[in-house]
Image (cartoon, rainbow, N blue to C red):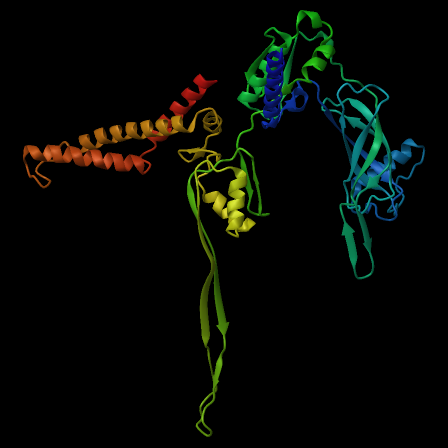
Amino acid sequence: MPSVISARVFETACAALLALALSALPAGATSRIKDLANIEGVRQNQLIGYGLVVGLNGTGDTLNNIPFTKQSLQAMLERMGVNIRGATIRTGNVAAVMVTGNLPPFGTQGTRMDVTVSALGDSKNLQGGTLLVTPLLGADGNVYAVAQGSVAIGGFQAEGAAASITRGVPTVGRIANGAIIEREIEFALNRLPNVRLALRNADFTTAKRIAAAVNDFLGVKTAEPIDPSTVQLSIPPEFKGNVVAFLTEIEQLQVDPDLAAKIVIDERSGIIVMGRDVRVATVAVAQGNLTVTISESPQVSQPNPLSRGRTVVTPNSRVGVTEDGKKFALVKDGVSLQQLVDGLNGLGIGPRSLINNTGSMPAKAVMPVINGRPDRELADALTKVSPQAQQKAKATATDFEAMFLNSMFSQMTSGIKGEGPFGDTPGTGVWRSMLTEQYSKSFAKAGGVGISNDVYRTLILQQAHRAS
């Protein structure tokens, strides 16, 4: 009996240790399908309209300079029963504006939406203004919403006789819930035979994982990746006529997205953004600050008295060169982003120098260039092929070009006789064949004529296709 109890205690302890070990493993960064893809057809629609903002404190359009504001004001007043044709208008409280907004998907009549108001003329400030009734049109020319309300701006402008200050953009404002939807866009979602998911970031692996997650959840094959950015879902029989319930179940599934290693460099602003999957090949980094100092101390040469000479200024320049912070480091193959950043920070490399170093490093995540042109298809394929396979493909492509160049060089030198250290003897052919073989190998390793690049690309794409 005690042995049975001890065995159970031992099994319980082992299970607890196993659970603890599993909990200590790093969890993948999973995301909901809802956060990775959009449902095709469920989207916003852009609206635009032209209107007038009134009530400005003398910061509106200059009517003599902006004719469309004057014409719009006259037409509006005439519709209100006020005839001002031929009269002189000198108001500065009106501004012509463009009103834009996004009609939300499945927006119903009577619901509200936000709009943005932007000055169209020479108005300096829209603060305190009120947008008059403005119809908002879609791409088909129909009116889908009507906007009106007080304009709220995020900036301001103040000026005096000799100075002025402006913060933000006072000529652009926003009206929260400022438009009422008047027309709906018909979209019969529940009657669709199939639904397509559009990935926000196109990726073959992510599309395949989304389809696998949906099929595993439903137990039948209803999802199929069509391309890197689209996954088609066939509506199961139990969800016919109730697509909303089907999508509610699907969009909550967790998927581990596959993100390509990426480096974004903005030299103008000095910003570098690197993804967590970036790895670099072996590279040596040397860092030092070279300071060149030039000092000028001119000397004046005075002539002797009564010598009829002239005063001459003699330049005296001193140039000094100092080099501080001489550091040299080796970055090994496969180093992670954190290790790379820590190492470069240890060398005292700032953002500007880091941009230059990063651009010159043989980074594995950099977009490959084939024959002078970036190849995005090859970049996606390289993520699916192991580094060892990439090296073999590169060696095979180089050997193939070397064979081609060897044949070409042999044909070029076949008609030349009597040249070489052996004269016109049988040994000349052996020597010449060895020479052309060495020339072709060296030429191919140096880049060749581009044949190896095309062969390498073809081999990588074939291996990536078999891996997927």
